[in-house]
Amino acid sequence: MPITEILPRAIAIPPMLRPDGAGAAVRARNLGRSFAGNRVLADLDLEVRPGEFLSIVGKSGCGKSTLLRLIAGLDQPSSGSIGVDGLPADRAGDRLRIMFQEPRLLPWATIAGNVAVGLRRGPDPEAVAEALASVQLADKADFWPAQLSGGQRQRAALARALVSHPGLLLLDEPLGALDALTRLTMQNLIRDMHDRAGFTAVLVTHDVAEAVALSDRIIVLGQGGILKETAILRVGPTRRGSPELAAIEAEILDAIFAA
Ligand SMILES: Nc1ncnc2c1ncn2[C@@H]1O[C@H](COP(=O)(O)OP(=O)(O)OP(=O)(O)O)[C@@H](O)[C@H]1O
Image 1 (cartoon, rainbow, N blue to C red):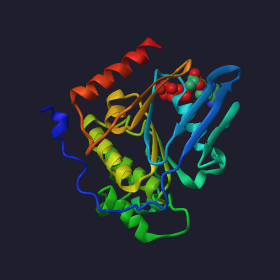
Image 2 (cartoon, rainbow, N blue to C red):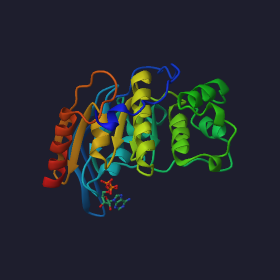
Image 3 (tube, protein in one colour):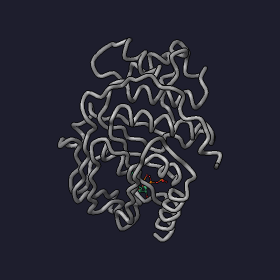
């Protein structure tokens, strides 16, 4: 059995983070984005179903982060439209949260204080405690960010992102700075949280194996828009190293390098 199949799954997670509603839906129509005449995205059509886990992969510079920023409403399209649950992305702020490669914690606030930043409706110590427990950081509530490891800081960032029960979690290479083992544990944690809470997830990653391990669907982005789309039927917990998943990974890598 490959070592990756026998790695512990994210340690027992308390049943928490019941969603306010179902996951949010994302819809892009003829989406385009240019920077000073340089066209990065053109005529892109994309739909993400409520509760789906979608990954976006592709060569460096193909526009993955640009697409994620447009979904988040952090950037405006040059043409076409993008919406979350039917709302223009820049008005859907309450329904979504985004995680980056760096945890972006406030150094002057405790871990509990940092998680509370993610709340939508005023103080809620119970929700903060629940979110910290869900990422196995209950015992670090009163620590400062500088007292945590890199993986623990990213878990705190995940708790901050999920404490408000968003319908949509956007992940921009959130595990890119972690060591390989911590990365695998975090992947399992993110997928477990997704399965329990029912939010929609859109992940940008350079790691095709990560995309295959986590996603229900993967799109390969390139100059011509979406170059390839692969659905992965999952049954049961995250599995790695199976011949089926290895074949999917190889196909996706081929599509990326052929671009
Ligand atoms: N604000 C901006 N101003 C000008 N050009 C930009 C801006 N944001 C992105 N670009 C350009 O758009 C292109 C796509 O960038 P983007 O960050 O979306 O790529 P990416 O696929 O996420 O790359 P990587 O995998 O290296 O992170 C790049 O050529 C980049 O220089």
